[in-house]
Length: 211
Image (cartoon, rainbow, N blue to C red):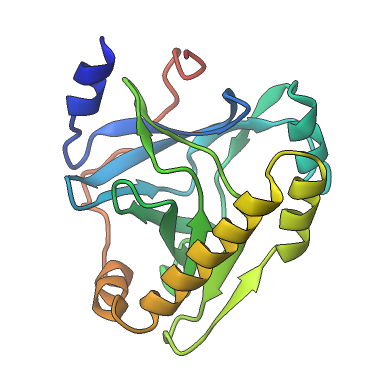
């Protein structure tokens, strides 16, 4: 499939795809997910507890140092503890995660995840996580930055430049501010969302590592 054909590809609600996070163009993590919406206005997908995904074989404390080496191994993990909906405006350098505890669907809030704008692939979407987060309270009254220290480490290790770090911070702060003001209704609608009863748990396809 050519690049124009891939860019024209659209998924339908209920389709199973693979959401991949990359470092230095190598697959860092591959997560099976279910499409909620794939339109010119929004891409949103659901990650369900019990999903088996591939991730780096290292601890959270080690992960940036491992990413900086450019070489890592992956192993399979189970997604546990939370339901996630990841939503992204096409072309925007961040996604908004709506998060509930599992299995009771207690809404715990949102997270802004700065990242490379989503790149469409034949199996789903690719991005690169930009380390910094903003956490938004469930009542939409407050937000705070998270993992600022890790952003500093990523810059020190050469994974990101100082200029990129400054841009990432600005984007994260802007979107977090919009979430508690102009995007409130959108976020509240996501918090009320539930998956259709007939949806099945997606699984990683055999070609999840393909370029």
